[in-house]
Length: 211
Image (cartoon, rainbow, N blue to C red; front, side, top):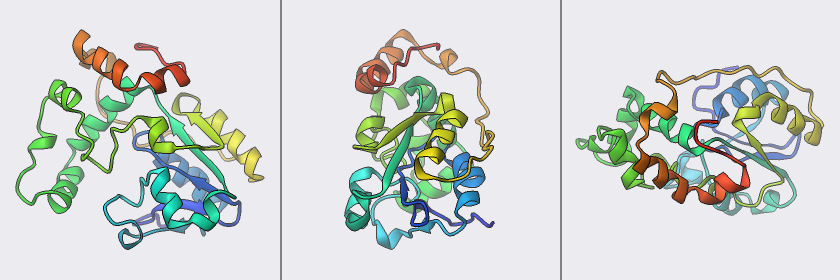
């Protein structure tokens, strides 16, 4: 299956909507899970959701695009330890593909937002970066039927397959970042910034720094 330019949103076959946040294992679930159980899953292009990356659409945008399916389909998303997730986002943004995206989407010459230090990145928390990738996870996902955790990726995806009546798949784990353990990038100050900004996510999904 050629996944180039595919933008996974939903499956009419199994009647689900995947609200795919950034850096939560979405590429692995799409390639080894969703595309296997339903090769005809729906894709959207930018003309369907101007101003947002169609691969990472917030719940409120999806509801506007497909209001006739939003309430009746099984909606799921995934959360990840926010301290770990932000490190993953930061390093992903510093890759060449992200530079190309930034120059095309925001500014043809100024790439400085992705060349800041990790401390600056955390302190500024600029929501313009990468399609609202820095929004709190619960806010991005909205009211879903199930919220899995990246740390339990396989088990939670198996549960979703049970809910939608799809065969379970061994999804593995791909697209790993090339960086050290996330705890090595934080100071006491930046650690607390994340704790405050993502307090609801941390409480709701029982996350702790270093665990």
